[in-house]
Length: 112
Image (cartoon, rainbow, N blue to C red; front, side, top):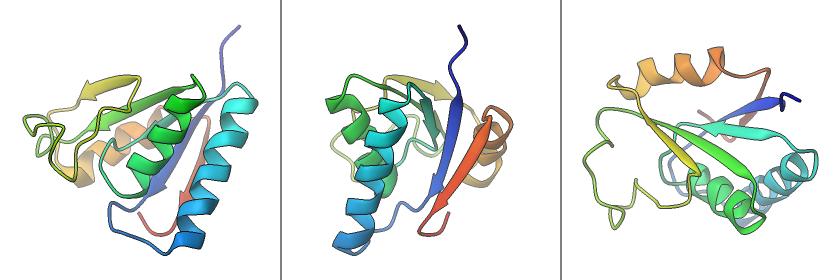
């Protein structure tokens, strides 16, 4: 059976603790419902979401922009928590179209 794919559009900036907690709760709920989560694969809240999904053995797909593709995991905008990384070859803005078009539903959290 095909799993529901939920795109989470959010920020790579640092956010308040209550926003980070909301992102973790969202990730837990989506994993509990068997969803595949799709993000831009960056740092910030995208990292928080991917890390939470990873802890729960869920699936998080990161659509990487060309700017991220060659960065090491030690860089603040890169992280090892995506289950799947897709190197889009596109800019930050353009790769968002892949997130949107690949998702059955979209959640926007704290910008994006």
